[in-house]
Length: 100
Image (tube, rainbow, N blue to C red; front, side):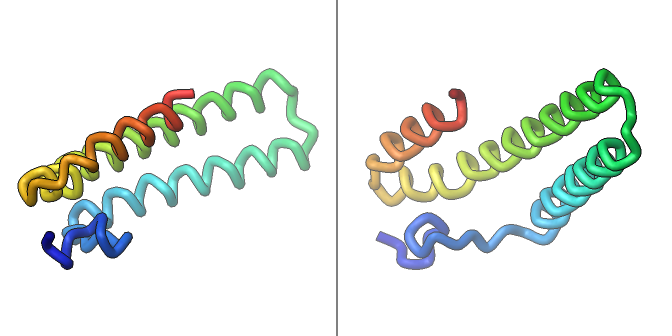
């Protein structure tokens, strides 16, 4: 087994473009959350806050899909190429957790 495999050491050496894209998404989500907090503090109408909450959920889902795709293209692919088929069970368990 390749000891430098991202999933073995539980750290992922992502390329700069991917890392920046993920961080950019998280920064936008963080800004949206701060915006919702401000709406609550300013006693904005509930419906407007709920709509913003749905937007945050959609943004977080998009982040999760991007991260999952990266995981499959890197960690899962690498481990399968190494002959480690346990990664399939790990991926299935993860999918069950995130699809609840």
